[in-house]
Length: 142
Image 1 (tube, one colour):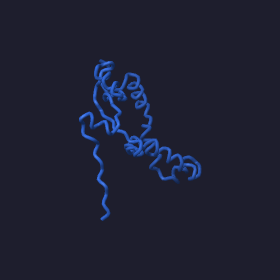
Image 2 (tube, rainbow, N blue to C red):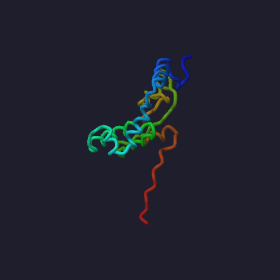
Image 3 (tube, rainbow, N blue to C red):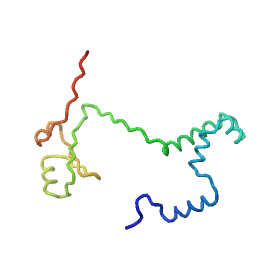
């Protein structure tokens, strides 16, 4: 059965308990202090120049950011000449008659965690009895 999803393993739990019992600062809270502290005050604490601590604050902010903000979605740009239609067909058992039939028709089958994906030419979609991809309407000059 194993450990429930998200539960700490014994070693991690024991380390966390010893760490907290020793009174150490939480690393994320420490990073937060470095980020939010006045640059001049931080320079005084480190006995250095302000220009030397600003890169440290930036590094701390970059390290802390993933815990506070999700990453922006990545944009995928595909050249119209290279655009393909992918048909997600679900689970097709390896070596099954359906897989052989698709291969005989010349389709490329790619397996992934969510099932199988068939790479088809846009004009082939009509032959499969499926709706063709929608074309975006042209913007009219108005």
